[in-house]
Length: 534
Image 1 (cartoon, rainbow, N blue to C red):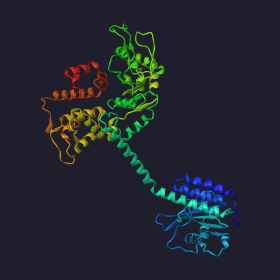
Image 2: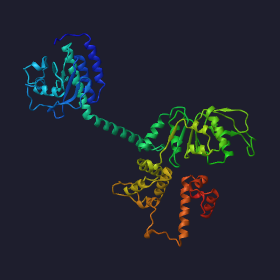
Image 3: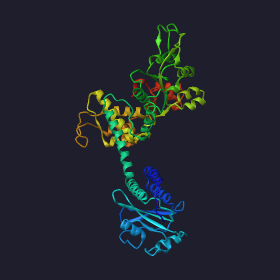
């Protein structure tokens, strides 16, 4: 077989080298190298042996039979300890020399019986054989390239360059296969530490009041939200009562390009329909009884900034139609005015309700829903964010301690355990109430010397009653009858629900499946008033 030079081979080698450089997985790299080598020499079959991690054997890592990759083949590893130089493969590896056999089945210079046997199993009889050691640019042998039934070798020098390049790529691929997973784990750990460091830095800022996200679900929610912080899109914030929807609204505003302008907050369920319309759009003097002067509406007050409409699902239908027009045109007309006012306002809306269910009940406009739902973000309940419970608790401890001008107490292990076991039907708002009450009840004269340094400890007994509903003989309440016990339990349930629903009696009645009149009667019966807000 002649060794003739070809000017076009260098271009082919360059293209192949670029292809190999893009490969990172060992199997793909070996397959690419063997396919390229066969293309260069027009070989029908081939093998690439790769040095194993022990450095004591060469493994047949990829085998081509015509255009197919053989997963099941007869080729065995080459053991370097018992190498036999009469074997052409072993000779090539041992001496770092190329072995070319033109008439394979008539050549007597090497012991080829094992090759003949394997070829017989594969039902073929090759004309020739090429065994080329794969030596990288650091002169290390990393493998062996074997080709059968070659038609031509155009340029021995270029093929030598190709095999050196292939060896270097194999060495890199082996390294990545061995250490790649470690690099991935370290990268993930580094990203986690970076997030944690940012969270700690933010928590150390005395005025920081943004969302705390260490749980995966909350991190994902904020990552999704971060994509639109600077975009001029309205956002619909969904989530159960108490998850912190207003905190998210403040986070959006403070991290947008409107942060230097006003953030106006309005709870749509907190005031009657007539007053809500005036609050949102304003009115002119004399527009209705009691309108003794012009009033600027919240949309106008928020011009250039952000308007947060909480509990949008409780907005009356008539106002929903007017809100839809404002969202579409950014224009509105105050009550009693003939002139329209144009505003540049970003609207953030929030709801705990299932708006699709309200649409079916004709309690919410479908067109308004689809206008608000351009970018929805769901805040998961606290029971799905267990990794956030302790950081949130520590954040609330810091805030209340600063307001009381005291050193922040420390949560002991037993208290942490109880905090993590509770389901928090009132979500973050309930956690905040529990923690604040615990700080108020802590004995700030007591200094702990065990494990927590010199900071005060929140005792287990100070938080356990809030989340422990078991009653035993030793802690039975001092009540004279079952009627009193049931009545006291009913009172506690009502107070808890009122606190969780921000003392919006309509929502409490719906939650407890009671007529509003019955709820009002029970509140009067138990002498429950808003003064009992936790």
